[in-house]
Length: 219
Ligand code: ADP
Picture (cartoon, rainbow, N blue to C red):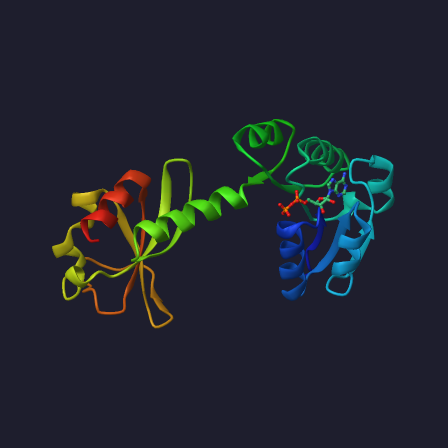
């Protein structure tokens, strides 16, 4: 099977990190920025690195942007450039365009003009850090929607030795334990009689407010 080809536009902290990671995973990556120095800094780490203005549709057409499977628009601060670039790459026929947004309003506009996925790296990282700060047992938090999320939770002392049935997390907190990790192994469909052992990490899905109730009940 042909490997997916990616283009990353905007090589700030986020864009350069995405480009570098995709390249490390073995994908072909075209990295674009209007700032020559940013392009040079990344040129040894990706397949192609080019200085160009991504709002210039002729320049983007000349680079063959329309042939890429996925284009990541990682221009955050210059909202106008981010929106124009998204329009240009969608018009050139890119199927999957992922765009970094500064805030909700920027994200809304991006969806309206055809972005296939909008990501909010700063907001998501802020949320994760907040969860870690408040609940030391929380290893990770993933937002599924505005209301729902998944948390990875170090099994608190009070749960150890009890089965999922005894803990009754679904009835008490409205959340579902969808997996239990231990020593790198994952039980992906734990049953009611599975007991929680020391060192277990519970992967729990639910409404954010229910997850918080669960976290606080055991903190
Ligand atoms: P981060 O917060 O991830 O560091 P920035 O918004 O600071 O992201 O960086 C965005 C990058 O996008 C910068 O390197 C900037 O030069 C680049 N950029 C901005 N406008 C354009 C454009 N029209 N064409 C190409 N690159 C652009």
